[in-house]
Image (tube, rainbow over all chains, first blue to last red; front, side):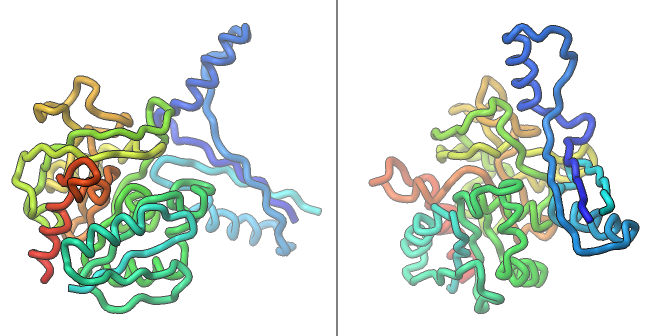
Length: 81
Length: 229
């Protein structure tokens, strides 16, 4: 079973890297990018076979290590098979 | 007085702080490897600067989970003073001994230069070598020093006078581009609730000997010896 974790900055937390990327895109001529927020994508291979248990386990991993809850939110997708 | 310096893979200021402590204490600090499950009883624990675990995931995040840090947290909970410098500050926020987080510098660049700090809380073991309001020149060298905390936490830090140092100009004034990293409220260092844990981004150990270009960092270590001996 696979888990895909997205870690993103909370709304309201400034993201200077995202701003720099947005600026660079503008300079390359890509108009119409209203905002850029940069985050992390983490993929986990799990031995757990119960998707519900896997989700609870990965959420605990996010809270303990994968995300810093002061500034980051996370989203977990469990892929069966 | 007994001190321990925690050494992670990627620490690079452990030897600097060892020299500064030796100079002030007149004895040898213990160097404790991150993989050790516990450390001996000491009067002061220093978590040094560097790039522990290559700053993987987030600065300080991996080091905060290393075996020795469990014992550092347990000892800090019992009141043993802990000083975290630069990466050490990042480790202390990641393991929950200090509130907030150190984000990427607002200017996105690694900043390595001398800055001026104003001593905002001289009533601790760490800062007793300085007077309240004293301005000191100390170097910073970091990429992730942009201190952030939510509004409630910031209000508590301010209300409880737990901001130990702020970035200022040579005249002791905030603003005028004195803040090198965009940190909230010009914060350079914060204390825990019991005032027994200090984390700061600047490096007092790097200006603790006139041969290094200045010694305004030395009073921190001399003051610790006075307070803890």
